Image 1 (cartoon, rainbow, N blue to C red):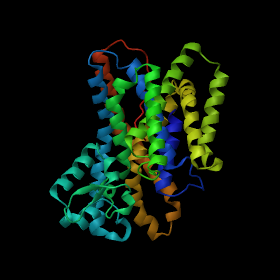
Image 2: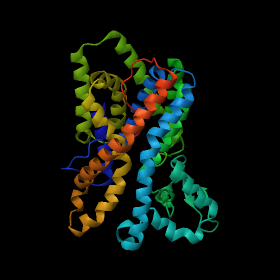
Image 3: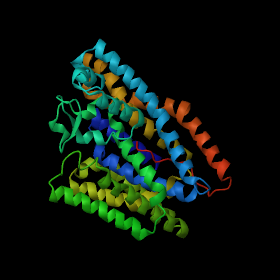
Image 4: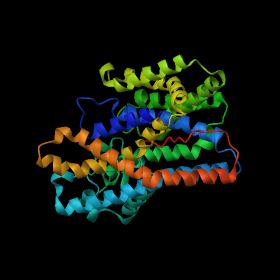
Length: 380
């Protein structure tokens, strides 16, 4: 599933930069929520077949954090440094929404507790999604709850140095819950899935909360996508036992990848989105069966997480250059090329060495485990 994950990450990049040769693929919202489905699948896989020994919950959580945080902290440090540099070198011409500008513009009005909470959110990722539900009261200097962050100034999300990492906050909350969810009976998983979808419908139709952030950043309703991934893993277990014909596996996989690549041509409305999500549940097991032993697909997939977390920083750094040359229309292609190079560096220098350490930690606790390909489902 590495190629799928990379396309989804590239779709998010394109949505923040510009289309590449007119292509947008699935866009940021569908990409992120599909990543949640894949994450539910992968976490079910590793918790069922890999993290089975004593202390499995603690080992799983610490290994997940080792997967997420080192690369994130490197990008965070670089983004903070670039933000401060651009504040003094470029001024607000290009970067009014870049994180250091909101701090500089609002420092006199911010309570120290508010500043501390923002620093904690930037460092730990936890709570970044909650910032999308807050506004800043310039009288008290504290945050307040709001139904629509777009109507507040400044928008609190703009204090994030890696603004796209709010999705990782949702991932981390699922990781905490996953050891206690993914092994439950299917009817329990389906019941929670139904409850999450019902809450989404109630917010949408009952309370008219059909807009951002309620339709994509509220964890109780986003949990449905992770649970769809858990259901997908149950389908995989059935397929794995019954060894479906390779022709069927190939046909389903290629059909779903073609849908992903041509998504924009089939419509971007809610019907198209939910049809795609529904198709992802049975398609993910077939894609995994097809690619689980492919080293090339695994290497491609490894690029998805670093591509996701570095691309906005890369875009920020490219904007002054592209603007001076009148090339902002090519921002998507330039950002993708540079981000892939940065991602490859992070994979070789940070992610893979830590992956080997994570695997040794598992083997030290449970030397004999079911064979599980080296895969990860971090939101990318």
